[in-house]
Amino acid sequence: MNELIQDYQSQQPQGGTLAQASSSREMEEVKGQIFMAKQFPRNIFQSEQRILDNCKRESLAKQAVYQYPRGGTKVEGPSIRLAEVLAQNWGNLAFGVKELEQREGESVAMAYAWDLETNVRQEKIFTVKHSRKAKGSIQKLTDPRDIYELVANNGARRVRACILGIIPGDIVDKAVDQCTDTLRGNGDKPLKERISNALNLFKQYRVTQDMIEDKFGYDAGAFTEYDLVELVKIYNSLKDGMSKPDDWFDKDAKKRRSDNSLEDDLKNSGEKPSENNKGKQTDGKAVKSDDSSKDVQVEEGELPFV
Image 1 (cartoon, rainbow, N blue to C red):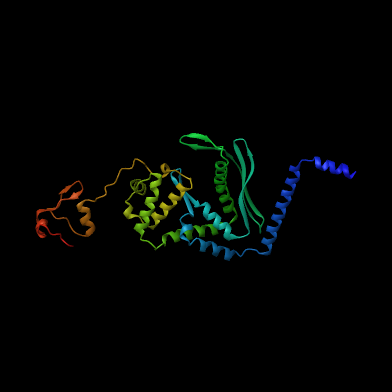
Image 2 (image 1 turned 90 degrees about the vertical axis):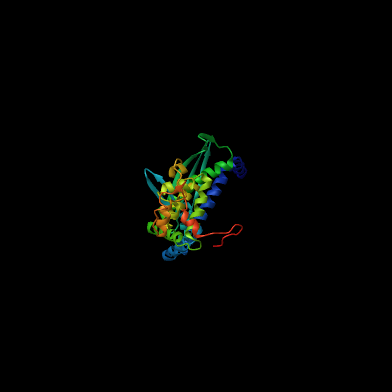
């Protein structure tokens, strides 16, 4: 009788046994996580303080908020990076992406976030086609690495939604406000230098300074901290693939003149234009009057020192 049982077991497919063992192992891991969460519950006030402390880091604040246009208005919210920081510091929260099935030409995956203390769970099951739009045509993906990255990118956005569905909204709002304050209060470099660095980052997307100025409606020299924060949000949106340059900027924007007129320069300096200087301009540059050339006389072969 024992020999018959052994023969029957040896004839059974090994896949079912392995799947059962894997399922049992995962169940034990989940039980262990729940047990530890009950033994060491989170302190909400400490978790909130840890989140706000992390939001004071400039590197995180620059990536904390995304922004993209829709229907003539701006849509913004916490980015994927900020959602990960929220989950890590909130504590006792399991989150991630699992690929449930990979079929011919598509993958079925699940994004989830699970509060192990309160047993509140958010999950989203979605299908990702193994294709990508490139140069106006649909490109089919066959490389396993490309497929993995495509599923991971699509899953990251669903994970963010799951995390934000678990963590209280007021904590998320405080984190976003703290990141904005961090960007405004960065005094390591002058504002003009930070704006210049931000404008240079857009060159890789073929976005010129004239296009940015046309969007804001005024010259970059008049940008404030608030404009810099919005500029960083747009850059993060482009970098994360949430939007395209055409969604934000007009490529046909006219180039603004770099030099102001003589009258505007005199107004900024608090002086009134004289009658001799009025109307004497050539290609945007002021023409000196005859009297001004008599004020300073330099002998030939010498350099004037100011």
